[in-house]
Image (cartoon, rainbow, N blue to C red; front, side, top):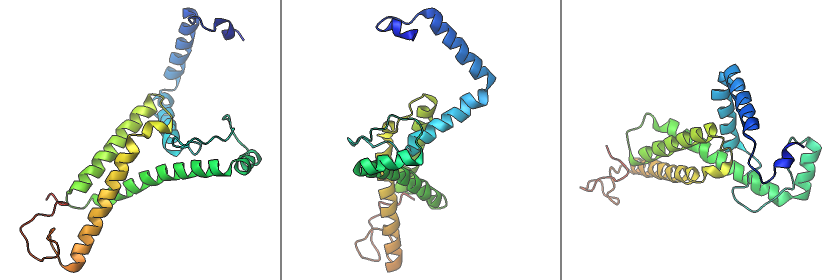
Length: 192
């Protein structure tokens, strides 16, 4: 291979310029593909990559590339626990995203609350970070490390507020009064 002769040396500037010209030519020939389609594909790989293990030390012996059903079944047979960890990791990541989006959709018509603001902030962070990762060629799920816990916290706060307001409504209690019908203490779950 021609490139193997340059191991440990600076890459020749002439070859670098040729690759830059090819890249520019491809970008100008298909701007929609370059600016929108490829970043969306990368974003999909970040969130929906089933082979990512979430940092768990599990290996499958798979070096990438496409797998047919027989090869995939063989990997599952040889490494069942590793496959389980990878599926659980991907399922958790997708589930957190789906639940956060569902709670967001349900919160749109509600009054502004602390949990709603935290949920929206976490989702805005996730959207911004994901867009940056997609356009910046950072396509590994490990780059979601800061995003997932923020979404998890927002989900827990949203569910806790829902159960709190639901149980208060069922018992005829308004505010956070420890079981009393009237009190002077405001409900910290509600800001409005």
